[in-house]
Amino acid sequence: MATVNHLLRQKGREVHTISPDDSVFDAIRQMAEKDIGSLVVIEDGRPVGIFTERHYARNVFLKGKSSPKTPVRDAMAIRPIFVLPEQTVEECMAVMTRHRIRHLPVLDGEDVVGIVSIGDLVQSTIADQKFAIDQLEHYIRG
Image 1 (cartoon, rainbow, N blue to C red):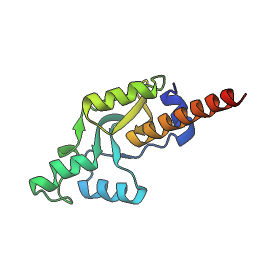
Image 2 (cartoon, helix red, strand yellow):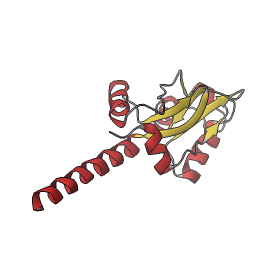
Image 3 (cartoon, rainbow, N blue to C red):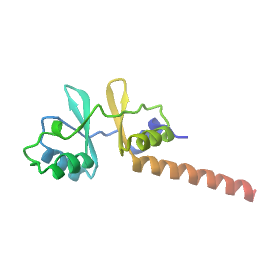
Image 4 (tube, helix red, strand yellow):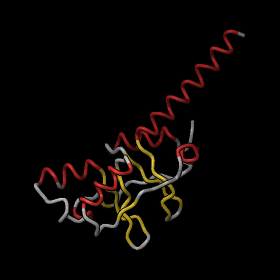
């Protein structure tokens, strides 16, 4: 089974961040420009939260708040769930399922070294299954 580290080597380790004092509008604009669904919230060089499209929908839009006037800190998830580079894709899928989340920042010590989404994990699982099927077909054909 592939690890998060293996997955990050393939997809890249770029992590998009935002300050908790930036506006939700700035966060949404950045996610749209980068075509991503989440931002790690960094304060004083440390991760303090995560902001996703779901947080915007539930904590800003549905509450009738103004995106330009609402700071990210008022809508983000605090104490986000992180994973480690050595964890497996299967472990990450279990964490996402248990906590009903779609994005997992990856921590190495106190540093955010990547982020994985449910889409990344599904793609990795499909690739592993395709490889296993190809190997079995090759073995059967001799």
